[in-house]
Length: 87
Image 1: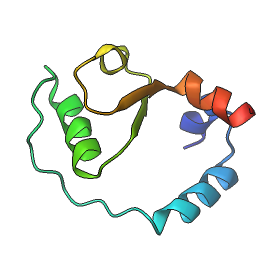
Image 2 (image 1 turned 60 degrees about the horizontal axis):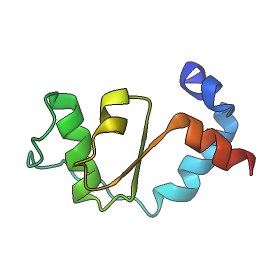
Image 3 (image 1 turned 30 degrees about the vertical axis):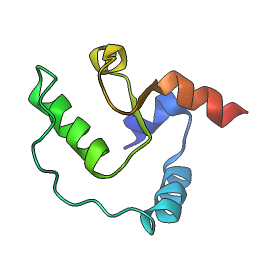
């Protein structure tokens, strides 16, 4: 987990607090496979999760997802998240 959090400048303790705060508002059911515009199955899975859970943002480092103009949600990079955290 530390390897994931290190580039975002979060500590595990901070991440755990964030997860605890938002977990009461999040209900994730297994997505139905609907969105098939991506050539990668894992991307389609993420798209389905975002669509079916009414997500406004998908934060990713995947350049192909970031470049996809057809995705029906806002795609942001991890750099965007770092800048938001600093302000």
